[in-house]
Length: 215
Ligand code: DX5
Ligand code: ZN
Image 1 (cartoon, rainbow, N blue to C red):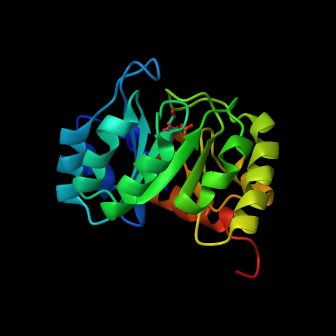
Image 2: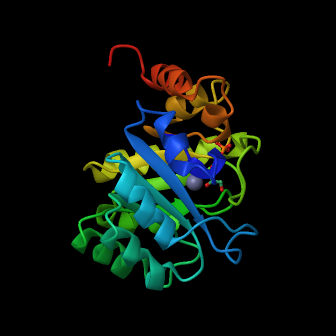
């Protein structure tokens, strides 16, 4: 799914209209504390909600998600993901998001292991593995995260249920197949999509590469 981080912030609606085949939009919320960058917050997400029926996938790179995350579900986002490094009570927060009818996701920075969260997986609808340090688009994919993706796949298979395994950071035609092989099934691409001559065609290309033969 395309990340709006690389879209035109002065013309978000026009940017969204360049990607009509996107079934979901990834929205990066940054607070200049959890990450050294500041993007957008709840009022902008509310405005985006009004102009698109696409699934809104909110990636919160903020401190104190326990306090701020539920409002994004209330604003109509179908998926809300918070960083485990920032959450005080991830189980309580995930339950609150689900109570508000959103999918609940946890995100892990490159140095954060999945194993401490293995027992939490039944409480979740998505695990987002960052393959760059969060904060900026256009960074190089970190291959060192591939082993964690594979370990997470195994834990998710053992857990069962419909938990998405999302990869975010440096996803492109060069790197997406490595993520598929490691077991990911949801992919975020910012600069690869919005930096392409035709963003909508790039989505189709990435989708094809992400679909294993026979599916
Ligand atoms: C980075 C964000 C990503 C970002 C990815 O902190 O979470 O969603 O938009 O951008 P690319 O695809 O350019 O790495
Ligand atoms: Zn993101």
